[in-house]
Image (cartoon, rainbow, N blue to C red; front, side, top):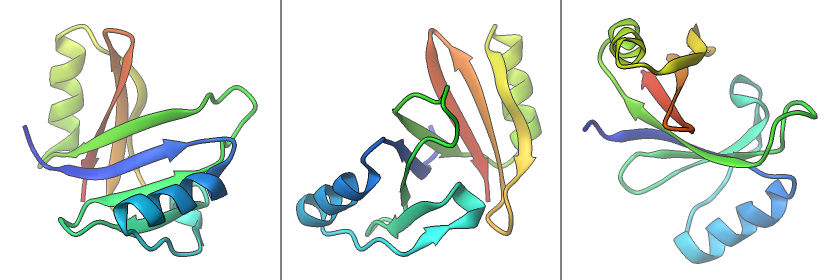
Length: 115
């Protein structure tokens, strides 16, 4: 398994979670990032990005979603789909940060990120 590139946390109380992660994990969050849905983003010691944001729509439920780094996002999504995963969000360019995709398998959302 590849390294975690981005850990996305969606919460109705994003400010409280940023405070928790700052105190418990020693992270330092920046201002809202438009490329990541207004998430406040911190970089962990190992280089993993941690983003905490509020839901973007009324139907979006709180979630912790892990995006694993992949070399070829198109291939990763196709392989997941071949194994029966539902493509919830196809490979999509995300500003200057690379491309991401979300698939659902076993009732769990799985993220891929190609920097």
